[in-house]
Every structure is written in structure tokens, then in C-alpha cells.
Length: 203
Image 1 (cartoon, rainbow, N blue to C red):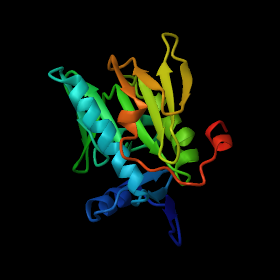
Image 2 (image 1 turned 30 degrees about the vertical axis):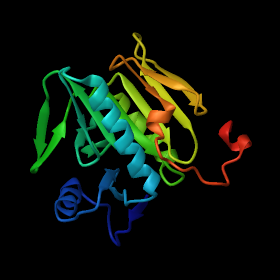
Image 3 (image 1 turned 90 degrees about the vertical axis):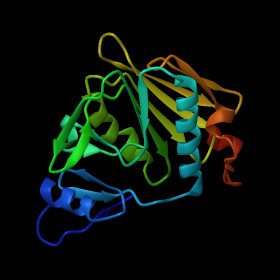
Image 4 (image 1 turned 135 degrees about the vertical axis):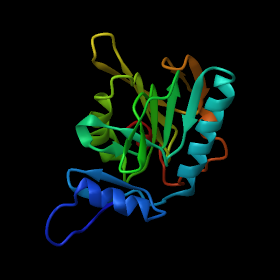
């Protein structure tokens, strides 16, 4: 993840959307900067497919839809939108359009796959932006370099409760969808870096 430099001023939303429309690459806009979400590790794509497929199987005929990383989600506090790795909407879709870009308004669950490049951004700036989405009930981050899942659940008082799950023996209960994902499902056929030590798993 790296910001694209601009010589004079910050980018406008209109310039960002024009770039997005004319590129096959994923970019996100944050406070005048355009951030490249260029492809990284193979594990990232594998985890996205594992989790997305598991969601579709577990949700079955329920009125829920699962979307991938090309789907925009409107973020009021970090306009205009983000591009989460996985988004789930249950019930009728609420969509707004901005300069030809369709944005989902009512996600119940968002999943991001963490890497060393994006971890700080996903845990801080992005999470702040997502918290302002009224329909969002759960924000899940999956580490691609070790068996570690972070789950944030919105509480009745509006606060967010964080839970960390570490180790392949774990399962994660997703309250927003009333489903359970096991780590072997999430990390199916994922090979972790050899340098991942026992000490790293708990830091």
C-alpha cells in the first residue's frame, strides 16, 4: 500500500474517481491522497476466496449477498468510499451512485485481509471510517502471515468490542451473520512464512 505522489496539491474526489474508472488497479482515497491497493501476496487472494466461499455456503438461501474487493462501500467519515476485501449485506441492497460509481450503503459485515503493508491503515484509519456506517455490526481482520483473526463487534451502546483469536484450533463466531468459521476453513491451503515464530503469534 503506497500513496501516489502529486506535485502541486492534493487529489480531488473527482480526480480519484476518474483514475479508478480508467485503471485495472484498486485505489482508495484518503484525505486528498490516493492509496494504491496493489496486489501483494498470493495468500491474500487465497484467504479472500476461502472466506467468501465459506460465507456463501454457510448463508445458503438466506437473503444475504457477499461482495469482493471491487465493490465500493460508502464511508461518510472518509469520503467517498472504501473498497473492502469482503462485504456482506443482508436484506435489500441500499445503493448510492457517485459519478458513475455504485456504493453500498448498508453492509452488516466487512472483512479485511491484513498484511504488514496495510495493517496499521486497516486497524486505525479504515476502522474509524467504518465505525460511522450505521448498519455495520461487525468488522473482521484476517492476518495473512499467521493464524490470527481480530473481530470487532458493535455493542448496544455503540462501543466496539475487540476479540483476538490466535492458533489453528480456533473458530470465530460471527454474530452479524449467525455463522461460525473455523481457522482451517479460513486458512485452507495457506502456507505461512517460515519465519513466523511462536513468539510472533502472541505479539
